[in-house]
Image (tube, rainbow, N blue to C red):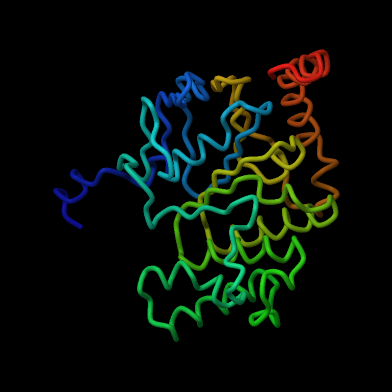
Amino acid sequence: MTDAAVATDPATATDPAVRVVGLTKDFPGGTRALEGVTFDVPAGELTSLIGPSGCGKTTTLKIVAGLIPATSGEVIVKGRPVTGPGPERAFVFQDFALLPWATVLRNVAFGLELRGVPKAEREATAREYIGKANLGGFEHHYPHQLSGGMRQRVGLARALAVDADILLMDEPFASVDEQIRRAFQEDLLRLLSEERKTVLFVTHSIEEAVYVSDQIVILTRGPGRVSNAVQPQIARDGTPDEIRRNQGYLDAVEEIWGQLRSYVEEDMRAPEGADR
């Protein structure tokens, strides 16, 4: 690469994969969901968004995905402003968003089909990620034949199959029980280590955020603003149980809970049916 090419490249290896700058979002009727939200998502790392209900976590994710526009501010992905969806970003929905009439194989291959990838190539890629998501043998099953946890694995395999650099995950494990949720967290970290993806991850769970994240961005009650960003100092060379007993893990959980406690207590004091 020439010096001139380096000089004109809008992104460098040291730039964040995603830069959110002064993001504000107003919805019709005057509701302001976000106000001046600014944070970076480092390349190759997992950043979680956490905060009280209504703080704009999912709204932020959808703006980064290019699914809805910001009222003001901007999102920069790999050095370029976001103006809509792009192939470098893939969305993993909380409700799976699978095609009910399509098999696991076709669901996982669907993004590649939309991009015009030949059938043999896209099915080979889909089978690879079906295997990585521990779904081998279920290629010809339909979503209604799968458990909720298996459907979520299909959604993750589909996002990985399109080889997007950035995964945007909206509470992907919220609909499964705690035991399966923990298994998914471990699977996610394994897959991300293998695939070297950048992830922006929305969750309501403090423990989940601390376990999976390199960085946790804490939003205030709506309109959401960034109150703090926490980088858990965790030794990750032990078993999952050892990691959860690690002092760095416990300290990060307590630090985040200390910042969110007032919102929870406020909700508990609010009259039934009050606007929260």
